Length: 405
Image 1 (cartoon, rainbow, N blue to C red):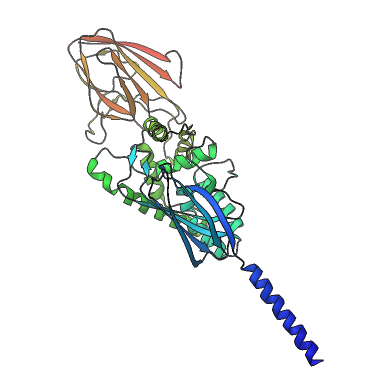
Image 2: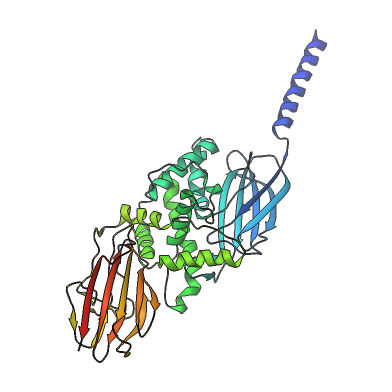
């Protein structure tokens, strides 16, 4: 009888050991990915750390490097005992804001479940929800449940009402779908634009700090309610040049030999403004007085775009307008002669300028819900036609004839 009991005990122990062995059996994983703020560049380091079910690191890691300036990387035939991993990209990236490479390296991370995945992308959204995922898993959620909740919470913060089925690590700024536009819009508003060259070396450090502060605020309760952080993002939006940014991204991929359709990121920037801005303009506004350059020359001067004003004296004027969200404006200044009786000068703030001097010029809006301005000098005597095209109108919404003496 004792021998039978010992035999049964041995069988049970063997069964338990076998089950534990099966549980910890390693599997091979192979997948591709992209690391993007703008796209990270060749030479960026990619590190994968294996995680246990509690999102703790097991000590097993693998490394590779980005092999293309579009941010692409791959990991092949790596052995892991867990489906969960932390993937980190550290390197230089292409700045959508400036159309050039960053002056310093940036680190972005993604927590992911590798089971069944052929691609895993790293971006600012995967980075920002990491702390929230860790908090929810610590509180008892499965990784899949935590990922769905964190994704939903962050989408709500962005002011997006429609659900996003894709995980954040499936998003790609070079693909033309709404959820990719959401990623690109937030990537853009995280970074400050400045005209001062001596400020540019600190921009990536500022971005790293902002990402950390946003992640910390979000991790605790799935909310970002620190008004100073939100105001920082709104300020960043107020300095953006959206046409230039779209051109920068398209030109970058074109230079890499890739034809891409950049998604409609502008509307997601407007959603964020709509949710958090204290003042929303509902009509096209042409203020009587405005600064031609709010940064360098804050003193206000008359605005030549005021529709009711048609007679002027020679001197300095501003071209200033504020347009509502999800709107655009084109203004054409058509000189009635080519006597070189006007000139443009100073910094162009918020406009795209197409200069046809001395026959005139065209300006296109690059911002919404914030003032756009530039300096115009009227010289000697002259006349001109000013045409206003609101919201892609094919014929002028309004036209005025002006003269100056």
